[in-house]
Image (cartoon, rainbow, N blue to C red):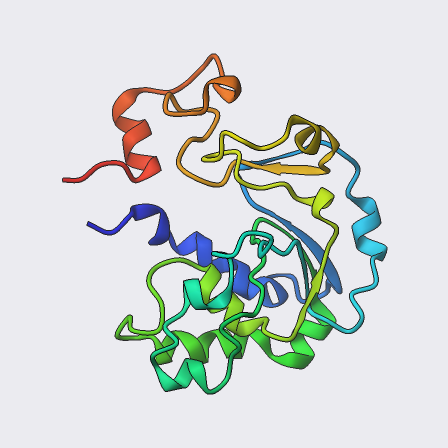
Length: 204
């Protein structure tokens, strides 16, 4: 069974931000499973050096490189992309919408979705097509802007969490669910069935 969290159409709205907000020139995109701990205003004046996407890179761990997300046995991928290219995080991103429109990133997204109609270039999710669309258009951000993994990683340094501008509970163990990591579990964890439904843990 496909994990339902990858099928929500709202997850794909992020690729249409310039069309939804045609008058805006820059936005800070925030996912719905994160906590903002510090003022994000400086992100709006951050120089992206002509790039479209400002994001924290995740390739400090070897498995967060392009070859882990994309099918490099397919020549459409292998002829255009570096398998060792560094992946980056969706969830807290700075988007230069002027540069986005100029690079026609939304059209790139449509192109890659069409190429992957048979599901052979990547599996489910919005990060793989984003890695393709923003290839060569991503400016690395300081890691302290966006600390990830609080929804699955028990070993994140507390000092890193405390210093982060944004902490991201990506993963199934959201703090409002009973399956959360103990130290993050909220007092009002929701009912069992609904919890299993939204975390994608149901198998039937």
